[in-house]
Length: 259
Image (tube, rainbow, N blue to C red):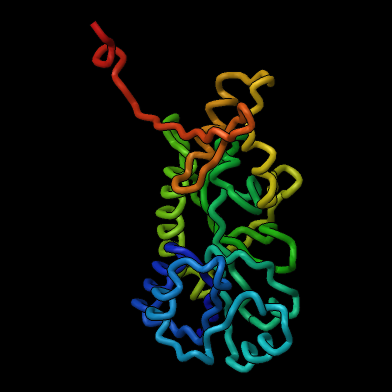
């Protein structure tokens, strides 16, 4: 089966590495544009592809790029932490479909920053492999899912790391069934789920000193937005922003008590 791989970030690198170890036929690679690239050199190195078979995701909607990809005669496309919306004319290229790995327990937290919104809204967290059938975001039929437990000490970054590892696990566990065509598609009820855009975090990052929060609400915002080196949540005083991060750990009530 000829695979077009669309990927970014550490998870994409490790999954591409896994596919190469399985001696799968990677015929093309689509990466993020310069300002969004993560682990680009690793992806290119592992792919072993020449420059003419490596594409910039910024141009995924252009006829030139789509025609060049079509010439590769790929059977399937795998989208791993890939952050561009795929056009219908691209999706139609692949007889075996386009499969996406999203670090959320769909239909909850479609779109951006699922690790953040799972904590803030106290919705289920996890990872999902699903089909992309149109230009809608994370709405396609589900292939497999794995829930990830959010612990009281989790922050945005610790939950994200858990989701990365779960992403590797679910892909490795599910790939043999995808390859053999032995998958069962399960439709989503998106009306019962949630969706967030990139800019939605702007609405929660500023902590108003005059607003009333419950302790749980405030803790959830602060820990969800704790993701070094990003600054996260803040309050303003005397015209200056003061950024906050939480450091959380379990403790024994008796052992931690001061004498």
